[in-house]
Length: 444
Image: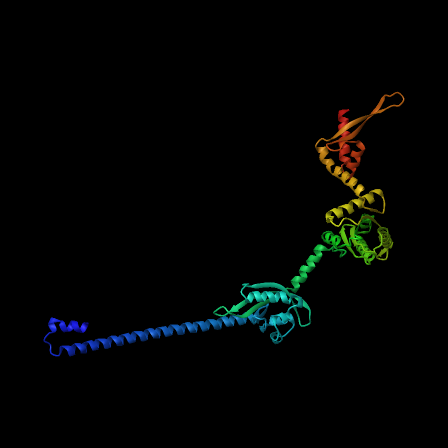
């Protein structure tokens, strides 16, 4: 197009050899443009090559740094580290893991990760790794037992993640293993201390209560279970007169004696607090009757315990017994029943007694009234009444007796004797008696 335009240009008409000259000029222009284009492309290619080379060098440098950092962490970590194939075969193990397992890194590398785990935990751990490799888990964190070279199990926490390639294919699994043996032992020790009495080593009331429901449910329905609730006699005198240290030894001795008595039986012995003990027996066809077991307790306790070669201390105990309670009774209700039975034994001066449903109903009714008396007095339900004392000879009034009277909304009028008994049971005898005298003196 440019050539045709030049040939038609008026100013160039008449120039000798115009066509040849136009061809030469256009050829020179094309040659120069092509050269410039080649130089530009070459420069661009050189710049791109330098950029690619720089990126490659930086990537390699970052890989070297990352690798060095990984090696530093791998070698210096206080936690055990294992690099495995997706199927669990160990590629590498660091010194911390080798020390934990009492093996060399080379010995570990000849095994699978699952060879290092307790047999009972292998399947659970294997399932977790399958989910991790399949992408169903992003990270795996679980507690399992390791097995050292000596076969000794130890608790450990496993934290694992998958290393994938550019297209997402699992290549390796990185697992960090923390030895939790000391923590686990500490937790178990604290748990034991929380559920056991420090002095005697027996289960405490909390543990005893939580186990009652299970033990009652598991007892043979044909024979049931029996709960013994014991309270040592005169322990406060021993503790106060001979010292707390000797009192502690007496408690430890009582615990040991109870364990001896019930060793042949399927029984749980516990210290319920203070000088009280509880024993739940799961009866069988061979279990002695209640009276026989009580005699064994009494005979065992009668053996004096000599302390410092001077004091021969023997104790006895009041025992409340609940024999074959319903299987669906709650632990709280069962302990309440045994406690009320023990109180009745104390009140009547007997050595032991069986739970009686009718007596229990009466006791519960009486304790309920006693507990409500303070509030009734404050609300004005308890009043002062008077009774005249008359001379039999002539019928004249000799004196007037002030008496308590409780106008109970549900029970009706409770007499003076009942009020006195209830007040004595709750510590109200002195303040209520003082109020009775003061009120009577003001009115008469």
